[in-house]
Length: 211
Image (cartoon, rainbow, N blue to C red):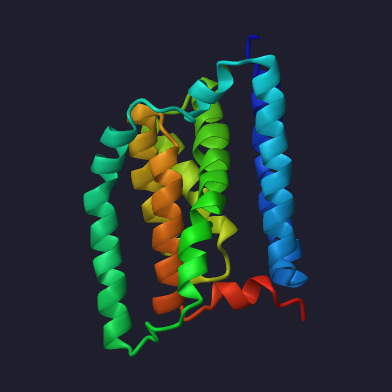
């Protein structure tokens, strides 16, 4: 089934709406668990629906086996530097490293990270590259997409800066090898450590707090 520019714009719009709903449900109403579950279910359903119509769409989006190792190894030095910086910051500012809540977040956050990377790199950046009426260079696409991802993390300025640079590097890897899995895994692992040891946020508690 041939992809159309109309569908690509609709997908980008749907991702933007998902970002806006983050502010409503997570930041305003404090329904973090509900938002994450609802977004994950909706987009998982969309992925399955598109796969039923076009069996090659998963490959096109980056849900593939090939190039996993190359993508993983390419991103590893960058991720190790980030983790080292996070640990250094945590030690310097007496972060609490023995909070067991970091364990379930570290294990389950990559699943949410994969969904986020699918939305950002496949549906936003990938569609911007493919739309026939848009004539943007890769650098422009990387900048626009990274800025959008940073905007989603407003109002935390440190998190916005961090996510901008992280996503820019992730986009370089994605456009080179088109494999989403390492992006989602690293997103989940690094974000878990960053939230706990730099921003001082207990994401496990935040998920179950509704007031």
